[in-house]
Amino acid sequence: MSELPTHLPDAIPAKVLWPVAVALRKRTLVSRWIDFQWEAASVDLDDEAADALEHTPTLTVEPITLDGDAACRWRGALMDLHPSEGEGYWLNLTSNAPCVFVMWRMEEGEALPRPSVVTASYNEAGRMLDAGDRVDRVPMPEAMQAALAAYTIKFYKPEVRKKVKRNDPFRDQGSARSGQVPAESGNELIVPPSSPAARGFGHG
Image 1 (tube, helix red, strand yellow):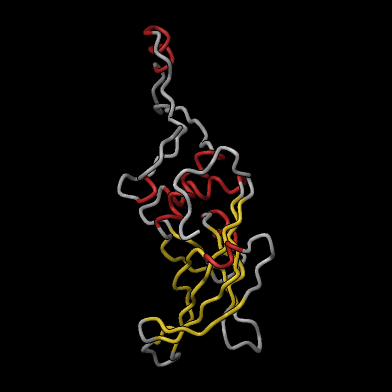
Image 2 (cartoon, rainbow, N blue to C red):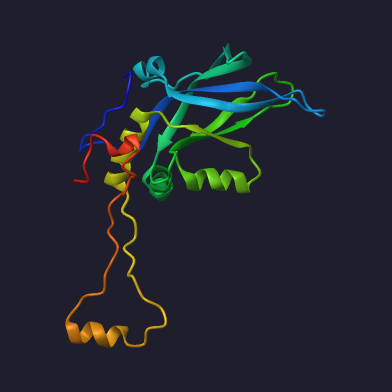
């Protein structure tokens, strides 16, 4: 499972778990007040954890180095997809830079920060921020973008909104005379053509 499929099968369950590896970096700062700051650096699919997904992955950590900074990589984290977060996935995919959100904590007495929640939903990330949690975002890998887009197309349909011109008292009369039906927005997932998520799948 080196990469997620572009097309998800019709029989895909609504609840999906993606094992991921989360890297957090201890970034050096030039400041009078603090010497460093922890931040999420990357989220990648975890091949080894995927091979043993029938068992609950154990969260483990290993020290690494990123661009000369001390860092750590947590393995065994899970990123779950759920239809109730469809709007959040849609907002993410239709942005200019789809990303993965990582909520992490530094527990008292621990030397390393630990990822608590990994999500692709804008809405879930917003709720965590509103609750005062630390949430970082990192670029979403291309294979994950394509798979998330396919999942979102299957389980989420944006609301159809009527386009109403304001302050036009003759709009309804004009439509009735001409026999025109008020225009409505489409309900397909519209992904920017430049996004990797736009490649390799259709809206069927």
